[in-house]
Amino acid sequence: MTTVDESTNVVAEKRSQGQSRRSKATGARESMLRRGQRTLLPPLLLGIFLVGIWYFISYGILDEQRRFLLRPPHEVWLVGFADWGNFTEILAGLWSSTQVALIGLAAAILIGLSLATLMSQSELIERAVFPYAVTLQAIPILAIVPLIGFWFGFGVSARVIVCVIIALFPIIVNTLFGLLAAPRGLHDLFTLQRASRLTRLRKLMFPAALPAIFAGLRISAGLSVIGAIVGDFFFGRGDPGIGQLLQRYANRLLGEQLIAAIIMSSLLGVIVFQLFGWLQTWAIGAWHEERDAEF
Amino acid sequence: MTFPDGTEAVHNITLDVAPKEFVTIVGPSGCGKSTLLRIAAGLLPHSAGEVKVNRERLGFVFQDATLMEWRTVQGNVELLAELRGMSAKERKARATEAIALVGLKGFENHYPKSLSGGMKMRVSLARTLTLEPPVFLFDEPFGALDEITRERLNEETLKLFMREQFAALFITHSIAEAVFLSTRVHVMSARPGRIIATFEVPFGYPRDAELRFDAAFGELSREISHALLEGHA
Image: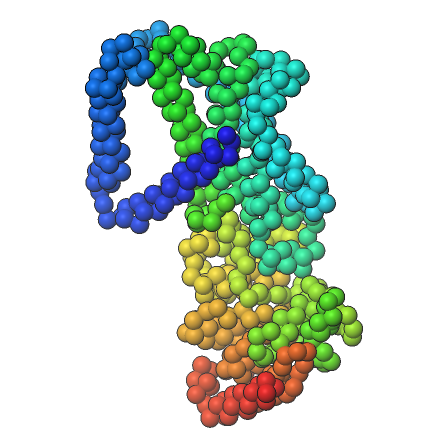
């Protein structure tokens, strides 16, 4: 599950890089308005087309007894979004899951950066830790659900643990890759000045790793949202997160709210991904040239 | 110098560079000239023989500019002084002077990504100049640049050489560059790397760009070229 999600995120990343490059190249010649048309119009048209198909399925294919399988768009809007009581329930669930995702992500960043730094300092540590990092990535969450429940209960802390497990690997790998990618010539320069290990790490390896670290952060941020929702399915005690709401709506055949909750949780994933994109531009955009070979 | 796998990189080389001397080694790719320079710098151990280089404030200019892309020109030029623990004020003063010296005044706040290849190399030179090195090692620094930029940087390197009075050991595979810069040119051949010919360059300093079209310049280039070909045969 995590690998599939990760690769779609990678594609999204490459795509967004490609897009920003394209718009940068043509940007100077175009007015804001025309650029807006270029970037907004195509997805808008496709969106209208998809909503059309949606209507067709709801009314053209499904008869009235089976229409609960896919409620038409305006009903989703009226019940899921425009009904304030229903919508606030979704928002509250989303907020609870967001908190879980953020705590999990923060923990994954802390653990991932520390581990990768240690691994970069000693090949022995790198060799020792790496297989376990890969294994961590390969663990089917479902397989360790009972164990996590045993140890951490079936509430918020278990959900956070799921987030950490899912989000950790890209941070470790990208950070390590970045730390080891500092150019040899610069290393020679530090050697010639008899720089200490700490100086080398602080002034050379760490700044050189920043682009890769941010690439890892973006992937992990998206994964942590997924982790929070997946965790919700298994560890539902405490505040209901969005995953629990999804389950509840599905069980009660509340199709409108189910689709509204799906749309909102997707939106959360997109926002988090974008947020880290902006963070990256803010932090290193001044000097870093985006290249295709980021991973 | 022999590598652990038994490959002999350079063999039986005797090389002296005195202060105010500009010594160049020309040779084909893979003849061990970079290895020689790295041994001189102390970046590689040597398996036999004796190396005496004043490594206090040693200047080393690499094949590519090796700039930190996350630092501005100013930040890059200050790096070596910073690693040597100089005060912020001192290294700022040195960097400002060095940047002016290589003609990059006004570019202090630019990041490397917005500089041309020649400008990056100037930043690299400026960075080394902040150490005021008595010994300058150049590892094919202008090899990746176009001919026009290379010739201009050759002329400016000579200006720096005359101003700073360092001892220079320069590696290149360009004969014209070697003759234009040097007081002495050694020709190396490969496997194992050894010096097969040495030429004293009879021109004094300062040298004018027009020197490249001088008949004596052409003659010396021709002789060096022949020596290189013989070493290859």
